[in-house]
Image (cartoon, rainbow, N blue to C red; front, side):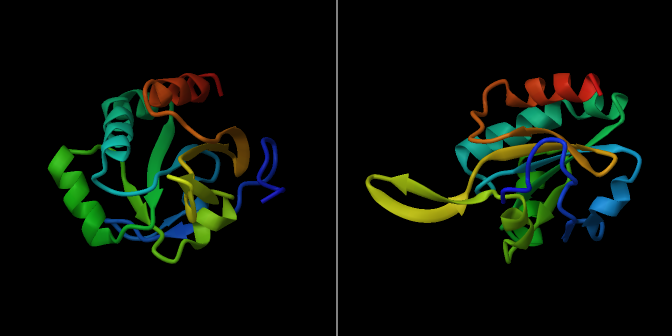
Length: 153
């Protein structure tokens, strides 16, 4: 994880997507926001997906793609997308390989119990480089903050 720092080369990825594989190579010469979230259809994750979806046109205007990533299946992603009318593609990483590569599989604590889970985190990648990294993301206003950073590229 130590090499997942701003300015470093973005770890390569390939995720299952509704319209086929989503790969880092697909965004060569472009910018992409990769945001990792714990679980489809939970309150914080729904709010985050809705905020990114609400700004999807603004991201597109800035020439930036947005992809949400969790360990949920494509079937779960399809239900989540349909239920909330999400406008950003979701990548499935059921084995968690990409999540781990980005250092977003971390030890968490709830009610004194330690367990492994996905840290809500966002990566702004341009030309294959990690331009900005947000860790331990708080959802309200996060998508707007990411958009602002993306527009300044």
